[in-house]
Image (cartoon, rainbow, N blue to C red; front, side):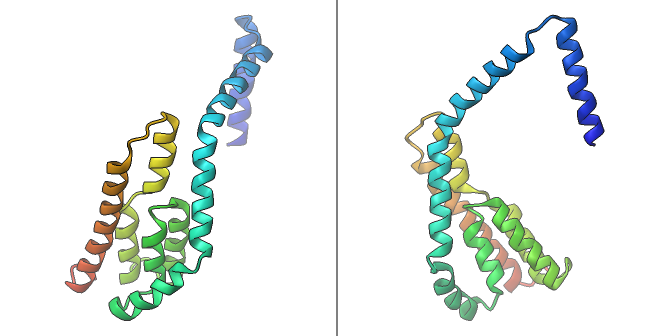
Length: 167
């Protein structure tokens, strides 16, 4: 794969030389344009990162987790996935992989985690990045709808579990 990328870069340099395009000036222009977009998106990304770290280090998950484990009798990893999926897709994928490694991919808990992973979205990421990039301030309906759909995927996962629709 690295050889292919090297060939593409070499081809690009040769084509620019053939067409007499100033490569260095074009590169500097692209970097300036990228920095402009970075300055637009950076506050939203910083806020999202701060919120995720505060949420995960606050102990809220362990507090709520004891209640849900007793009430629903599901593993803590599924609950952790339900709470982190609206915030971070990578975190929920890591938790899903941990469920796969511990129980196997055909286990009931793995299927429940797959339902949760595919049925929900990274709501806070979508709102902060996309709405932040276009400077749109009216995002409350999107936020409520996103959280409602994330909650609905959790409810469907529990319904499938308790009604025996997955095995």
